[in-house]
Image 1 (cartoon, rainbow, N blue to C red):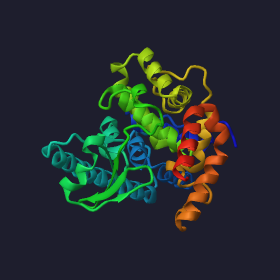
Image 2: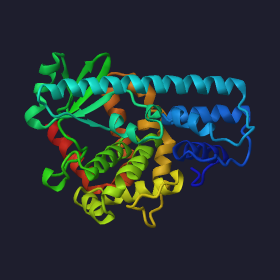
Image 3: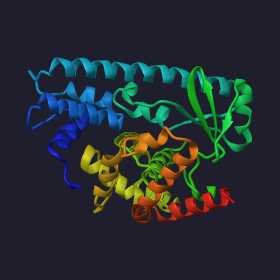
Length: 334
């Protein structure tokens, strides 16, 4: 696979950067109708249609999109923004309900990081992730009076006002002792939570551009509150130092953000390859969507195969966490 961006990818990343930074899009060549089809497909696969729409608004004056492209882009972006606004309303209602009962819910992932985007509603997400401390965990569904199902990792799933909610026992997707992790609610905890979530998917079925952008905008907003030295110690203690250097290198090269915790001389291509390969959470990798429609044993086999295929990458950038995850799965299957 090419280690450099294709002309279409160059245009795509330039439009995404324009949408993120609110700056003129500097594209070298006017896209053809076929090119626009490819750009829309890339945005759909990576779940960044809202940002592509914003980026297009920063094209040079007098630049006109073909009508079919404009109509589809406006429709897609409108859907994303309406969905984002609706989910925020539900998330606010959910946390208000739990807080009024004396619980201390902490929103995770999408609902949190959307606030860091130039237009929060343009950050795509489909469910709500919630963390409650162990002593409050079981009380939440009772307060909400909702039925729930339990996942193998101990998290529970239920619906609130038509939206899927995943309630987690762990704030971090990591298998390390809690004493080595920062307290939830701090800037460094949010940065670690987001990067660990992206790492979990990168070493598994795949990770997309949206998760990298999440980390970029989180660095932009939270980075000044944490010294680079402290962040390095947090990442080292959590076993995610090499992964975070890789992620920062990707953010610097392809998104034009410059987080205080930089990637140094790390080559970002290994992460670009994964982002290209499967898009959002790896859902668009070859054969993945087909496997997701099969019974549980087939889905698990597909996930295991992809995990093994990614093993050289995982052992290089997240060796400790990869091995701990394997041991945890082995213990759970005894």
